[in-house]
Length: 212
Image 1: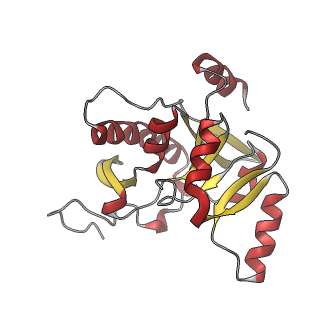
Image 2 (image 1 turned 90 degrees about the vertical axis):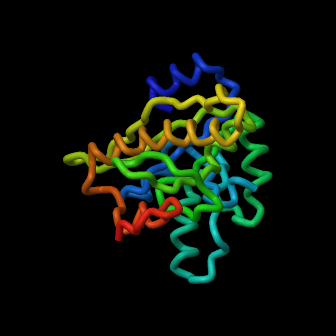
C-alpha cells in the first residue's frame, strides 16, 4: 500500500476493512499487482488481506477467458463465483480484509441511486455504500493509468461512510456521491483512458429524457 494511503488507513483504524473502488481504465491487467484484492460484482455485492485474494467473476466457459483469469490469479487475485460473493464479501470486510469493486458503470434503477457525475445524475450501484455502512469499512478510490513511459497507481481521498441522516437511503446516497466525485477526478485527469463506451448515463430518473 502506498505511504499516503497507509497513513490515512492507520489514522482511521488499521484493523478496518477496505473497499477498493476500482475505475475501469484501459490498463486492467496491472491492477491485481497493487494491492491484492477481492473483486465482487455490482449487484451481488448487495446480497484477510493475504496473498490469496478472491475476485468475483462469472464461471469461465471460453478457454481464452479462462487463460486470462489464470494470469490475473498469479498475483493473488483468484476468482470467486459471483453467485456466492455476497456473504463472502461481507465476511472479508468484517475481518478487516480488502475487497475490490467496480462501480463506475451504469446500473439498473432498482439496484442503484442517482448521484451527480460530470454534471448529470448517474444511476450508481448502492452496493459499495451498503457494504461500507454494514461493516464500517473504508472506501478507497483507486485506478491504474498509463503516464508517459510508466504505469501509475492513483489513490483518491479515503471515503468514510456517511451516517448523519436518520434515513438509511440518504446515507447511502451521500456516501455514493462522495466516492463518485473521487472517480470523476480520476477521469478528468485522464479522460482518454476511461472506458466511455459503457453509456454511464443510460438509466435516467423517472420523467427525464434519454441522453443518448
